[in-house]
Length: 329
Image 1 (cartoon, rainbow, N blue to C red):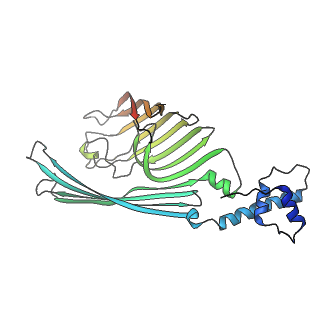
Image 2 (image 1 turned 180 degrees about the horizontal axis):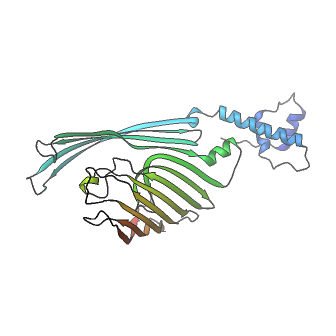
Image 3 (image 1 turned 180 degrees about the vertical axis):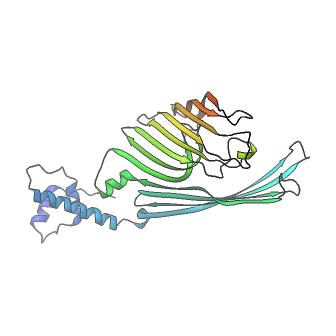
């Protein structure tokens, strides 16, 4: 919106001579951009000024273009794959896979409310006798692959309550990809609730979530391979006050509640773990980006053919990567 600045003396003439020019709402709004009144001005004037501000904001909201009040986008894509492979048992197996995704997103009240949903369906078409099961064809879905809603609390307070605090605060809920740090240790879709705030360059994120029931398990043992029920709690701190570097540190808890199907009496599969990670992402030189992460893991799980006593899990790992990007021409 283009703002036209009018000299104070011209406003004074317009108010003193109503026959020449009648003061409008825009003039009252311009006056709000001037320095705050002195404390010795009457309370009636201050109250009138606040009333004009509320009225102007109401009119601006009413006259806001529909595209800024509410926007909806939608789309989709289709992929097809052809697999021909030798599994060491049969001479070869042939699979044609077709994948369809449809998505819808919306944004309302200048970004205070945002949402996204995406459905996915896959169809597997095997050559006769090539499937590992008795089915020659297999339809999977449609399933909800992503679906979330974000409420920008800081924007809402600024617009409705006139609270202009130097913080960012968002609430998110739904199903989406969740990762901690660079995603080296934790990077998977979760049904979750997230609270994220930022002040003075420090961004704090808390996530509580659970894996969707259809998530393939990291443990490929038959009783738990095709489903998962793991609960995550993640707290992450990032510093975004530097232009070229973004350090982070996080701690995460993962509790495994996956049930066995079919049950196995002499083997337990529960795997509970804790993670502490730290690292950084950013740019070392122009067009040379980097990422590094270090992770320590502690936990409890069952060894092979164990169902009574759990063993300790102790591990650590690190990763460092660099990427060269081409500059804009």
